[in-house]
Image (cartoon, rainbow, N blue to C red; front, side, top):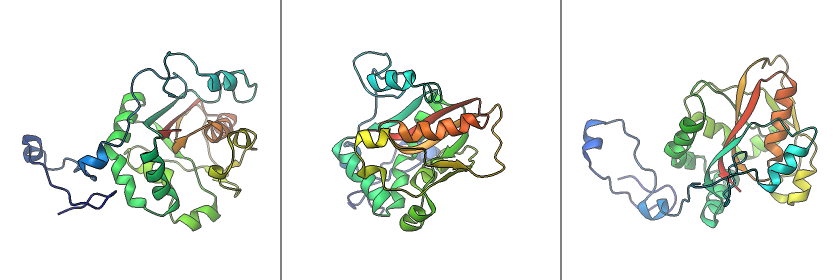
Length: 230
């Protein structure tokens, strides 16, 4: 019997007509109790960054981004799957910082659902990279694992300079960060619509820095799909 990837309780396989006739159906990777703690983003959101709010208009942060002469138009939109509640904060910490790469299996269906709803299956996926040092430290890139869930073409032209972890910086410090990305030589994006993949959207700085670089190198448009909206 399989165990919940979060709490390690044993999972009871539910038998349904669908499970009988569709043998390749994706089995649940967590128990009902843990599953109930995920909070999907639903209802009214900012049309640019997916921040939940009472009105369907650009949020204060996105208004400021749009007014920025360098970054105002580099990102078409961001869509996210989950709210960044306390449960998700702990789960993301396990996933990113404690090496629990298997947790990516939890996000298979919800991540694919949001992708299918908002983006073309022919989208060219670009995972936000880690620096070589950070990749060695963690052993995997959490954004690449998320991209692997989508069964769409993946390209990895972005490289990253090794700096202090973003999670240790204040919101103001993140907004003031210089662009840490550069393009791997020989990459061609002319006329292409690109989709950045990352685990979390917080201030939008990381996503927009990557998007600007891609736009500057000829991309027609850049959007993003993130697991969590912080």
